[in-house]
Figure: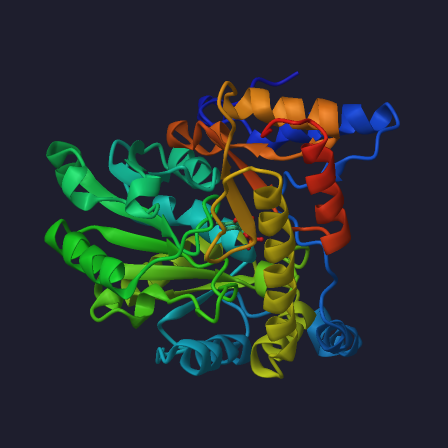
Amino acid sequence: QFEKSELLKTLPKQFFASLVAKVNSIQAQGHDVINLGQGNPDQPTPEHIVKSLQIAAEKPLNHKYSPFRGHQYLKEAACAYYEREHGVVLDPNTEVAILFGGKAGLVELPQCLLNPGDTVLVPDPGYPDYLSGVALAQVKTAFMPLLEENDFLPDYTRLDREVVQQAKMMFLNYPNNPTGASATAEFFEQTVVFAKEHSMCVVHDFAYGAIGFDGEKPRSFLQTEGAKDIGIEVYTLSKTYNMAGWRVGFAVGNKSVIQALELLQDHLYVSLFPAIQEAAATALLESQDCVRELVATYEGRRRVFIDGLRSIGWNVTAPKASFFAWLKVPEGFTSESFADYLLNEAYVAVAPGNGFGQFGEGYVRVGLLTSEERLQEAVKRIEALKLFT
Ligand code: PLP
């Protein structure tokens, strides 16, 4: 038996492991669990993208090593996507890095730019994997509370001044996991001013960049004037095209950050399977009807679920974007006691909000990742608990 390194021992516990174990044990007892706890898209990848992979996989050239930093056509497709969807013009040679999914980039970035002991600002509640990158880079975390009264945007004026002076990087994520909040142009403008004032790199996680409701298209951080001077945006195909298993994404923005990221990746990988790169380019360049359908599907699920909960007396807020609903737990419960209660009594799995940080306490996160019928069934099961009468 070998001991784990001291570095590995500093890694945070994988938050979803205990949720999965609880769900498995209830299922093992023969119960039909409606699992709304995790963030795994339930629908298949659109057919034309799968076809593109099949064709690309037959080409012997795609069986060889990819160029270390990925194929130029994928970088160009990423640029075309950003220009078409967000009006952001990028240079494929210097402003794009290909990633093994968004998570890889998010975990790598602190190691690219920071030194042990530096400070990173991290949203609370937030996507737990930011803390993995922070731990691997041996840097310090300072949390930025995301409060409902501030539309789940950090209030830079209320952060500790001394901490802010030391911070070299900040993670942001809009549309937001777990709160379903979206960012305004004004907030992103404030962010650029704040980051420039403190010479801080902004890492904007745009994983849900295609999923906005009520006709509101999520804003790219790079649409903000001056954003490229201090920022980088991490994009993934996982959610936009139901390609979570494919592990493909890219980072775009500040050239010096892209250079650092590609340098680190030169030492970690020889880019992705070329056939996946071809199919990813197909996804980005060809018809986006599948994305419009996806958004309509989530919007329909949101309506059924949120209206359903309101009709049984639970006063919930509808998410503006992403595929998550962030629900205040009824009085008398904590996040965890409520999640356990729903799982044990209604066989409905949700993620306790405290798993996303201390300011997530008092909430649960629901993924709208099953059919409208199953969501209606979840509402019925919750109604039967008579919590709101
Ligand atoms: N960022 C956020 C906020 C997420 O919710 C996820 C996935 O759940 C990711 C990044 C990572 O996505 P992937 O690694 O599949 O690109």
